Length: 311
Image (tube, rainbow, N blue to C red; front, side, top):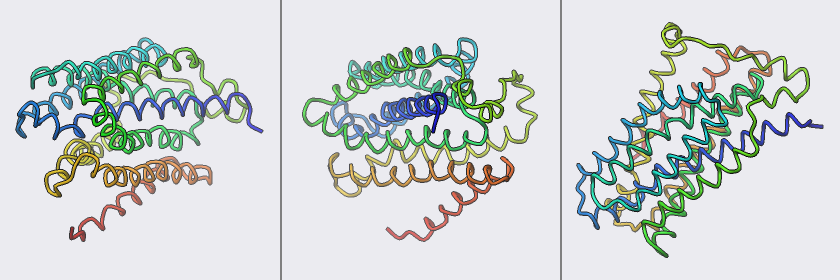
């Protein structure tokens, strides 16, 4: 029988999953509406690229600044702050009527959305024993794929039955609802403190490490290089695939919903599966380093068949 602590930590993981899904829906909506917005505001590809670049640059800075904020105020308050401001930024897109207006809204969105993953990873590290962290990280991270799946199914409906502005406002409101649930249910005390002794022993106390010290670790550079190689591909698919399908296959916004949902459904399987594989290997006595590298190797091999795609 699972005790209170075990149940609560998975509830925390579920909340992290939800906000990550909302986070990705917020950032993906502009890619889905690119055709509509380009037609209404007479954007060219350069205009759209400036808007996307503004988000990306702000997100890079925000990951650092919001991570620092969360370290200072804690996960509970930190998540409330960043989720509130990025939800407001999402809704603010509805007021934009120029490239500059969208650019400013995207910069604010990127700046505060940068706090999602630092906060979520910290919540996992303080609520889960080491043997379950990879699975917990995989589960909450799958929210990014679920958000990317739901967005192309939901956004076209909202835009068709109401307006493109309503799409941004709806997503902003979803973020505010999540904030209320998070604030009144999450406490800074790790859920593992309420679990059994075996789990509690695996949850290590948080240690403060300087930024310069982090840069001396090989694992830090491995993560940086890995993200630098995979990130551009992921972002390209997220922002440019919808309009690519519309233009090249003469498809409408509703036509591309199913193909986009399929792409991110497969990504979701990989996210959860990768976490599950490494967690299982750790439970069977393999080292954390070995287990996670094996999971990454399997994922890397899955990319190889792409080279043989003909259409």
